[in-house]
Length: 206
Image 1 (cartoon, rainbow, N blue to C red):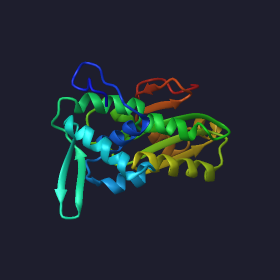
Image 2: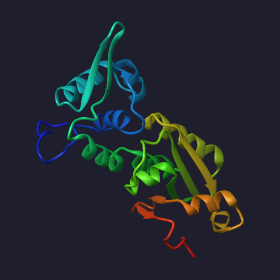
Image 3: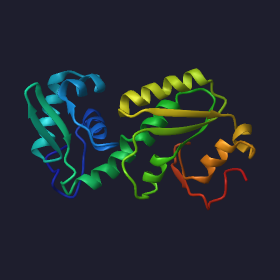
């Protein structure tokens, strides 16, 4: 982050920094080695070391020395933690990554998050989710959808599970699994304007 990190403005130095922070601040708490982060972010070790050390000096991340090297984790005690999590959710979190990866698929009409991540985007309380559940509506082949899920998984460091349905299938009230999805919260990430829907809201197209 830029030198004004402790000020009122929050600014990311680069896409790499945003993705690094998203990997460490979103989802379950975890420790990672510098090498693991470099592999997951598909960049060189020196770049990761410089970014991590910069963020550790700003007290956003915590470094722990071990016999095999340094491990890095989030600093949930900093006052910046909650604002950063909210910002990362919108810029480098599941909604942004899922929209980018699944938006490349021909035949995609709508993409929604459901389950625990939809609740977090709706600011409902709960622990950091350990995976991402995605509903894809359109005429999309399952294999490309699972390829997109693998790319999103690699970027987020969290398993991404796609559910693919045609518009006619989504409109069908006879599917108990889809009824369960409708009964929970949905966060639309495609089309591009995010729309949150809670159980009391009208169903799309109804």
